[in-house]
Length: 118
Length: 118
DNA sequence: ATCGAATATTCCTTGACAGGAATATTCCAA
DNA sequence: TTGGAATATTCCTGTCAAGGAATATTCGAT
Image 1 (cartoon, rainbow over the protein chains, first blue to last red):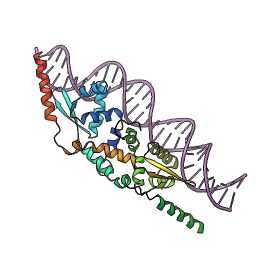
Image 2 (cartoon, rainbow over the protein chains, first blue to last red):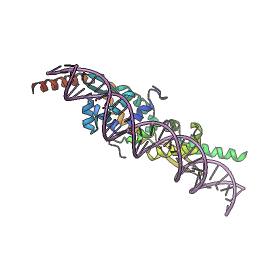
Image 3 (tube, each protein chain N blue to C red):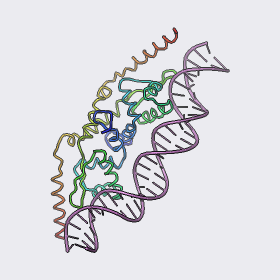
Image 4 (cartoon, helix red, strand yellow):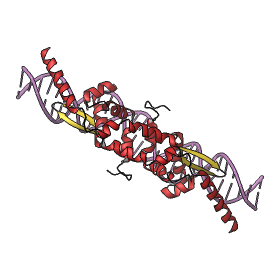
């Protein structure tokens, strides 16, 4: 938990910003899967799948349950809740077309004028 | 728009997964700013600020308006809307504590048994 | 105890990318 | 039309992360 935004760790975004890992997350949306199944469906070699799964786990996006030989990976809700909160805080930007640009331009104008006077 | 998820471009995540760029986005949440102001507030040299702003613009996260010498950057709503939709599609994962793990384990059990029989 | 299946880890190489420094561009004012 | 302010671009260098290949580990079954 080293992010500066409420609950959202920036490394979460980094973890998701890789195609294979994003694909894994999409896969696991339908339920838990083992490493082998994930590797097969993504067309990855097992070691690479394990590496990506490790990154996702280290970032708290996935959790593992050992079942005999297999490791079953599944999504954890927390990162998605955090991401949801963060995006939610941009509601104003998402909804309003009022973007303060005109205000800002007038403000710039004023700065120019005061500079002229000095 | 090369992402495979409805509206969400994976490069959007990549662009946001860099601390300075995330910081820029947070800054612009309060309204548009010029390159110089952004550089100053982030403690960045102007060229680095311009580079990050270019990445964000290329990804459709920001848009520019030229005003004389200055370039005024501001947030675009679309990427946030797309991100919101995507996260929203994980509502079930975020809310339910029912995660199908038990189902999955039973399924594995059944596979084991049928293998025994062959 | 040994074997094979499932998974993790290590080492290596290569490509992408961020920062630094210098320079190019654009624009307004005088 | 020249100068300076604001911004963009280029070149260079170092770092980091992803894939390939090989190997290590763990576990159940026999």
